[in-house]
Image (cartoon, rainbow, N blue to C red):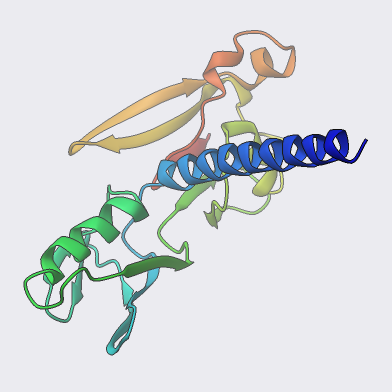
Length: 191
């Protein structure tokens, strides 16, 4: 009976270890999905190197400055990719550096809602936000808004595009694919 109990306990520990490793992998992939943006505030540190701790802001050009590393591209990269870049550059000076990069504030992940809404302005996106959620964040549309002429302005690779959004269709549960997830810098225009 003791042997059976030991086997059950071993099985439970094995299952917990397996579940723990899978949840870690899942959470790691979620953090890798966020791409750093200009304006984000990061804390960068190197273990056992007190002089190598610094809070940095991702500049408008998308880069950061860090001692011994110089300039590093942050915008458009995940936190993990930036951490690897910094660690690789520090290897010239520190054997096997243990680098930590953490996001202090997501100030670069903004979207804008303008036009006939109750509270136009810029808003922080702390999670994925679609067009309907953005309109809600802006206090909803005003009485005279042209709900089926809403546009999402998006700049990619220097080119500005206008993505149409018909509120009436989405409200009825139709053509739901137009309720896109906004990207940093998107502007929702409500005429």
